[in-house]
Length: 218
Image (cartoon, rainbow, N blue to C red):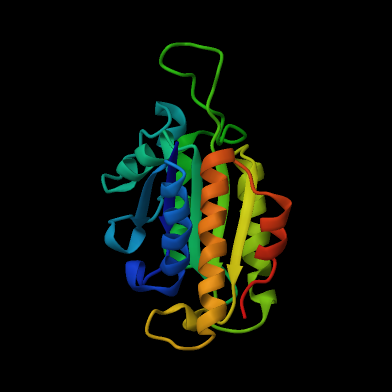
């Protein structure tokens, strides 16, 4: 079991979104999963030029030489792929959007993302599950409306099941140095760990956990 997270926060490992990610991944590790937390802020990802050479030469044959292929390799053998981003002006971060634009390299129109045939030519193809994590500083859950619409469209486009969405308002309180909602915060961290554990152990979330995640903050 491998869980790969793509964190599109410009603040990377120091951001509030990463607090959510780390708690989620702790639960996955407890269930025996291998985890990778990729910080796009630490990578060199250039803008897609729209040349579509990857559509003619084949998946991952991009003319741009940067860190994109390395990240795609981590996604290629993942059982669960998690996209993460803070809300920036009502949407995902520009950093994550640039990354997603480059994912056009996985195939031409209508082919993203048909699973590749395994090396052993078996009939079984591993299709990873998809999840979304996002945080915002405001207390209005409507801030996540566009992100939720976006990730549902992504799941449809890449032919993957969207297994869970984790949204958290008032995210400044998640910082370890913050005493705001101290007790509630610890309970929420336990929920995030349980979420990661369930996904790694069962590849799906229980109705109980899904209902609790709807809380979206304090």
